[in-house]
Length: 189
Image 1 (cartoon, one colour):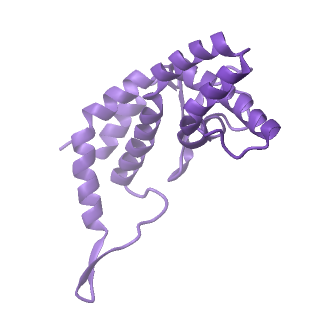
Image 2: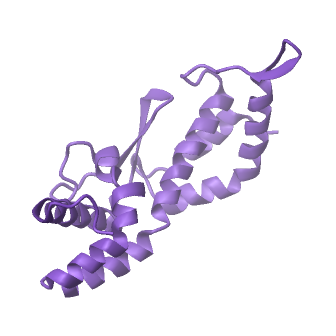
C-alpha cells in the first residue's frame, strides 16, 4: 500500500505554478477514492474504544496529526470543491438566460425564484469562502481554498474553472438581496 504522504505529494505535483485546475483535482479524487474509503474506515476504527461495555467513538484532535488524517482532510476539502463545480454548466446556461431577460423585472423575479435554492443555500457563501473580502469580479484572483484542519495550508484553484459559478453568485447576490429589500420579503418562493 502506498503511503498517505505519497498521495499528498502526488496531489501537490499537480499544480501549475501554484495554481490547480479542477480537472486534475477531479482526476486525483477519482483515482484515490478507494484508498480514501479504506483509510477513512481504518481511521474511524482507530478512534473507537470499548468503554462500559459499549463501543464509543472518541473525538480526534481538531488539527491533522498524522499523514493519514492530512490525506483524509485534503480529500474531503477537495471533494467539497468538486461538488461545487458540478453546477458550472448549469450556471453557464442560467447566465445566458439572465443576460437576455435582465431588463424584464417579472422575468428576473422568476429567474431568481428558480435559482433561489442555489443562491441562498449551497452557494450562499461561495464568494466569501473562496475570495474573502476581495471583489471576485473586479479582481482576477483565483479561488483560495483553506483547510480547516491545517490553518497553514492554502491552495489556489484556477478561477476560469469556476467562471460561471463566480458570475452567477455575484449576479444572484447583487440582484436577489436588493430585490428582497425593495419588496420587503424574506424569500421569493
